[in-house]
Length: 317
Image (tube, rainbow, N blue to C red; front, side):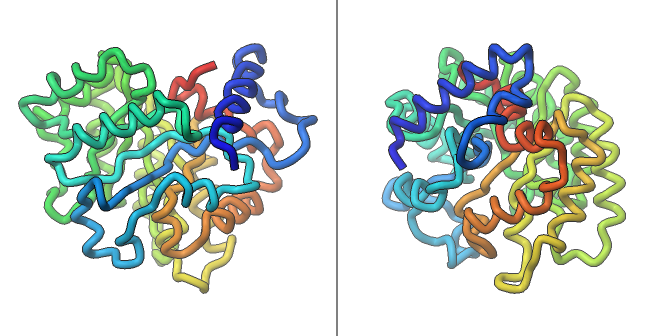
């Protein structure tokens, strides 16, 4: 897959979106080949450059995953652009990670057209940290992983944390919510405290495919979906499946529930590569998702895989 071609192709396609009266629901109906994909959750990590402490507990992922690996994983699937998602590096390296990926996007040598960087909204230097990137339009948002073992439940409700998330809203940046399913009630309170910030809920709220009872998760998803500044990312869930022993039927209840609650305009696709490889290849994840949504209207399928990402992450046209 030629990265320069992908980027030109993406810009041409999104120009069509801009001309389509606010939606490109039918913009690609007559195009051959797979439906174009904007992957809103693409990781990379080079362990010769960055330290990721959490990999010690994930031996299957404890190696470098580079751009050439991503290109091979997505080849032939129609990925025309991607958003880099921070990888929870050692906190001392957050600034270096942000600088590295924003420069990589600037060079135009990859499918990446935007980035969500790491940061600590609760820290005293958060405003100064963000100010470094004020003039970088490829910076789309920030994520602070909340489900790590050293982050207690309720951490996102600290007054300093809330102040940092409000600052993101004032700067036109979004916040990706990545938390335990049991913390979705905290997410509701955080969103209510920050009505001017756009939120993206990663991995369908981290519901486990193997969970026997999704009652509490379903209720909390319903509450979050009532907040119109929240979008749901259909990503990550396959990683919780039993390797080699899952089917589309295992994933479908989660995907169908978020579609019912968030509606077609507030869903975006995320590959979550390489984390998805804990249970599936990138191709298996995409093809399974296509199978699950096969009976959705074509316009809704395009919104999930492509159009909504352009709107939510404010991608270039």
